[in-house]
Image (cartoon, rainbow, N blue to C red; front, top):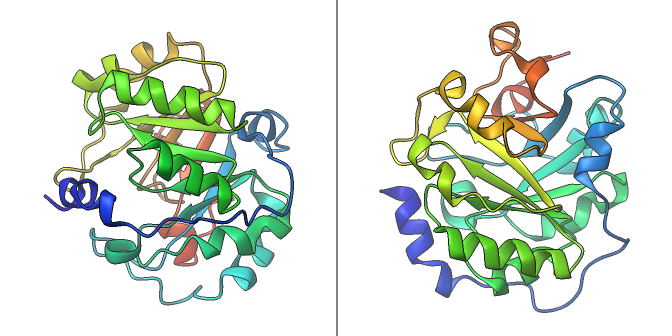
Length: 236
């Protein structure tokens, strides 16, 4: 499967080796809490995805975020290069907006967390469906030592056990099954279990102006939205 292949190639990835941070770390938790309109939107920039998305309309990253900066609480930058066309330099570019930056990648090592920090990231992604509890715990704690927050994401209800709850953690529920790359929304099934951790919850994937009213978004602290906004959909 594609995502398994990405993880298997992580040791060959070229990582950031010098510090490109231009400002102090910003808290996504605080930004979502202080968002004028709730839940706060974390807007994602990507060039393509294996699910079939192609960014045809908003290819200029600075022009894109200039147009939406007043309506978002955070920025997500997809940095995986092969399948998503990502580039860590995109994170460096968007530090000018003073919004917390999520490094959206298939992170599996301390070196990748450190690279996310050096690129200018404030938050990094860990995916419970592909990482075990001990790995997630180690990377959450290591990120915390750098001052970073972690978005610990899950889709499979059987992988909720891999969540490591900590002060610097936000919990994400991905409506997409990353093993099949198909939408498979089980939010109703897992919501109570995720809420019990007492941490901010983020709803991810496939959120559009057409379905947002049906997704019980009031339950969440944030919405991670990529393809629909990039394609010109006006969520708000």
